[in-house]
Image 1 (cartoon, rainbow, N blue to C red):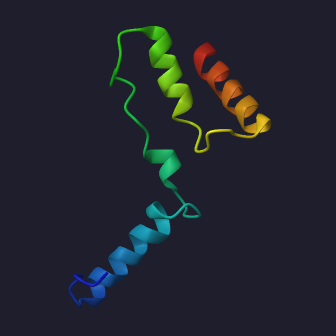
Image 2 (image 1 turned 30 degrees about the vertical axis):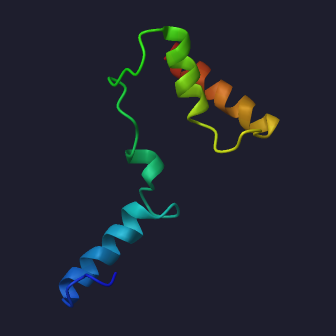
Length: 81
């Protein structure tokens, strides 16, 4: 980070944040704590809402079938709980 002040304590704190919260292989990766709020409703139509939420889990236009099944199982578990 070019604009960061040259302070050893600040560097240590920034390294702590990156190591524990920011990277995907950290102790608490973003997928644990960075979730979209469930009270934010983008549409009043339940079908459109499900479709939007479902599609937000995929990062490719044509995901692998096993990824689709995994997401469907996750939706089923979240629906029943």
